[in-house]
Length: 265
Image (cartoon, helix red, strand yellow):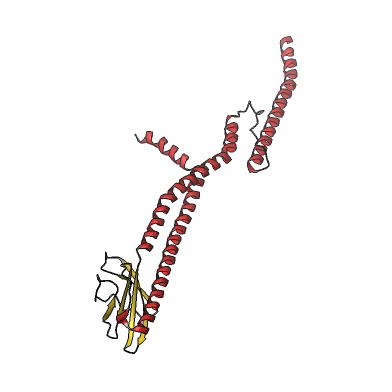
């Protein structure tokens, strides 16, 4: 049983050890790693850019609401009724004095320093929000305006890009592997033709020559070298045959004389 499996293992090792297979595997692996790293960077950049856009939008709204609080106080605000954009106004004791959403009511979202931002989870569908703050100074004291914008669009966009890359990269790698396999196979086809021809050449067929591709590349020079080697071998064999023939002729005359003298005697 082991003796039968040995040739099979040998054939598999020989097949997987060819230049064509190794080149295809190395090229596909190298490009695959590069594409994977690039995809991670791309998704990270997209997420960062979208998050920065949400942060800028939230900060602009916070500054706008803070300006309104500074002019008319927190009781006369016209706050948006949008679950994707939450607004709260906190007094000096960090108590909610105005809120844009009835779902969060007087429950404080977060305390964040003016000009900074943080990511929070809000009880509305357990979504993630990016919260920023702006200070508003009034005659009644300082108020803190907290604005939180939903990050669901950021998550959806990054998820869509990740899905697209996960589906597209394997297809791209398969196309790359097939192209590499075909190109390398075509490049090595003359080498295989040279190998077969040399393998079939015997001592009586030194007149045969290997096929020489057109051009001056490495394979063409290899074929030219092989043909010159075969020509030298053929020439050496012809000289050897001529030497043997001459030696045989020279030896026949003395042998004939000796035989004749022996017969006379």
